Length: 261
Image (cartoon, rainbow, N blue to C red; front, side, top):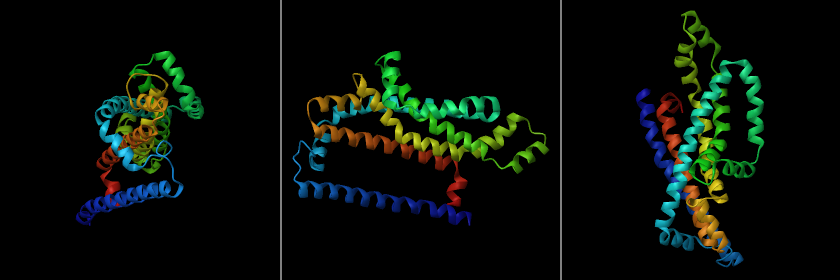
């Protein structure tokens, strides 16, 4: 059975690739149909061919901006991952911290990002640090909450078994709580990955010299909708790439879930 499970895993990849190709084909076909039916001019809704031409002509410039955006995104995401897991661990360890911190986590999530980003830029300037902190702010909540719920979801029977063997608190977290919370942490990380690039772009949109957000701002001021759409495509590709990386790492860290599925 274990051999069959291992052999069944690779077959999912071609099927998933086919689904992605079909979905993108339908999307671009619908895009062309809408332009053909409603006769949108290029400055309102550029065609996929026009956007592809911008991606080709501005490839070097877009690469430089995307590299800065991805740097800010990855560092901010990693920072949120570390802080989120530590906060979840402390909340699970201490009831006092949990009662004091959990309501503030919810309140922080209720603050609009467009209101937080300017404050961060005023405090930390228009350099990469401010964008990194904006990304960390966006990614922190889903990671911390899902990690905390992962700690809480541990079966009490396993905890009692470790207590029977006289395991210390450190041993319980090392051998039980942390492995059991990995699926929850990965779920939060995948959610955060979809928002992380957006956080960096919003920070760059409000101020900076490099990044996809800066490219979008300049395109908007020059009324170049084709470049705006090209920047949106880059943001989608970066978000999807980071999501797939997290998904790939998650499959390697949780082989038992992959075999079970």
